[in-house]
Length: 232
Ligand SMILES: Nc1ncnc2c1ncn2[C@@H]1O[C@H](COP(=O)(O)OP(=O)(O)OP(=O)(O)O)[C@@H](O)[C@H]1O
Image (tube, rainbow, N blue to C red; front, side, top):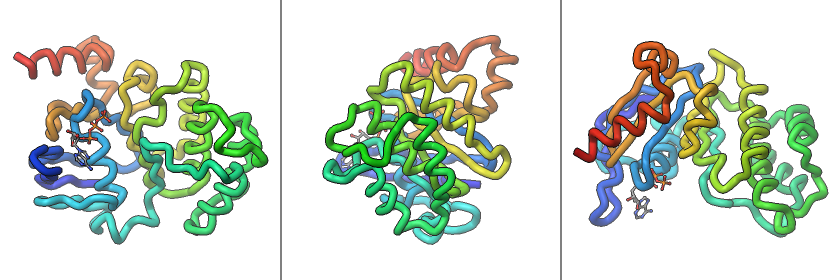
């Protein structure tokens, strides 16, 4: 389980996280939704150990994020791949850092995503780069998979491929996926638990299924309603 205990983070005059409290359960697919600047990336980076709380604590299975880095596969929002590398070289580079790299899975995913190890990252399309980022993250057998905006700027067919890859490889109960996205409608059927975040706080959270059954609304409708009320 990942616990945020009254976590605050400030960047200059911006309060990115404001005493954020949340428990992200193990073995589920978790959606982190919210408008631009809500604090989604800041939260995900904190789990990945890339920034630290000013106040409060993030605890992952009883440890601080810095200690559990090997447990976490992180797909950043930014394009972090070296353009001069081929996909195969990028895979070799990633593999050298992580003992949980699964080479069979890498080759399987490479084929499934219609990528080729010889392709040069600087010369492939944006969608192919998004798929490469997914490939390099999902080829690890890490118990926690953090995906920050994996669908951003990607066409609908490629988005479907990315979502199908996540579903296909997901080890329920064993693996925890946290996915931050604006494309809520597209991950609606994928997520088990949802957290709506705004201005650095969790506004609403719960089981996606229960929300749908109890409210008879889609997650997109729930989010629109929640944020409309927040504005008033
Ligand atoms: N390194 C940084 N330096 C300065 N301000 C930052 C930094 N990182 C985040 N912020 C600010 O903190 C707030 C939360 O940003 P964050 O990136 O977490 O939002 P987000 O919910 O991921 O937004 P988006 O959906 O637009 O990616 C924003 O106001 C942002 O400008």
